[in-house]
Image 1 (tube, rainbow over the protein chains, first blue to last red):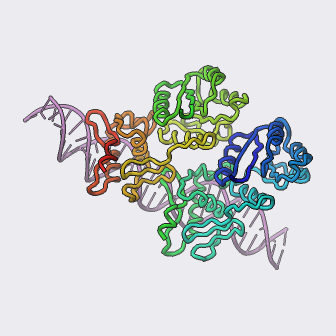
Image 2: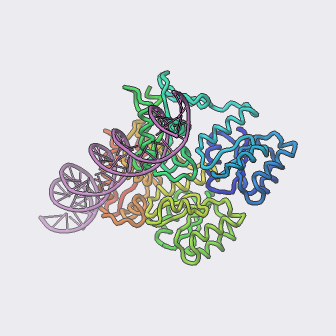
Image 3: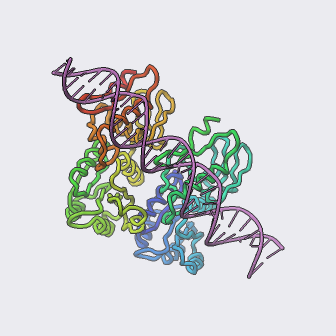
Length: 233
Length: 233
DNA sequence: AATTGGATGACACTCACGTGACAACGCTCC
DNA sequence: GGAGCGTTGTCACGTGAGTGTCATCCAATT
């Protein structure tokens, strides 16, 4: 059983997105929509990490954070704050209240997952795959390096996250909408065709002469990392 | 007993189409035609998912959605909005009063079912078949791949949906009208003969020498995926 | 044989995807 | 500060796969 994560967030779609991706990574996910509910839940069970929204009904994130730190059982439990853009000043207050990390909405899924992993590595050194590999491709989350046939490749940040996300579910086809949510952020307004462009750039970046293209276009639907790619080697 | 789905839709034929196909997938289906009725029904029983039309008599979909999110019992219940073309796009996503997903009419049945499955996978991880298989044929919904005798086949989007739909109810005969509704969309105006052409293309695409044709023509009625096909192997 | 309904090849047309170009932005380094 | 560089989102354009319709041919049914 993986590490337990509690999501405290009132925005339902965001909660689902997070839950889905965390579970896909092997976490045990629980979630509540209100600050006071969260407090009760935390009395029942202490998770390994909490994702805490800044603005909450019932009990504000910052206040909840303070209370968590007071109780001895939850004193050292890692907390990641989710803050909306524009609350810049609040960041510092959030951290000073005792959050271990914060992340600004909108954020990409890989970015969040990276922070979760980073925090859990400190407290719960359960081994979580840091190296994604398929065929002659290798993606190291920790060092942010991508190799193909032991040749180092240069990818932009977005291309890296895109490849990272695709490689976590080889074979699975994602719509452009899904990719925008996962790679760019959960409520950014970006043209869907932009995904095409980045896929194109990614393809170009990982292209090696006489080697097959690992990214598959599914006409009318979206893209996927070709799961047969490794076998074709 | 499968997951329970509530349909809130005033267009009777569409309701029937949805009910029919959802039940074929093993869902427990209930339906109401008015927004205010839906609210009452939801007080009696909370389903696992709601399909909600945007425009409704009695109480608009958007208002109903808001109210659903207010009540604690239905706060986290997945909602899929059915919207007419023209109100589409990011507006709804932005305006979204809490729907988890939306789908634009006209939509195909496989498309809708895919979204229903996706949402229920998160909240109710009851195992739902992602792989359709019959004889030497294999259709993977997740990777969008079709194999026959372990040989990868190439199908266009429409052919894929057509085969997917036929394979979910092996042996059952569908009229052209039914197929148009299910595969193309519930109110597209397309010549019925077009179905013939696509069936022909599908047949050609899945043809392998000396293997039987899995698609059966029922003269005067329509087509079906041959349920004896698997046994003929 | 006549009639009805289905199969199929041809064709025009649409539309989704790939790609190069470009402006805006944020960096770093003088 | 300003110049240079890399990255990003959008657009325009070209191309080819996919789609719908039709005419013709073929098979089944009467």
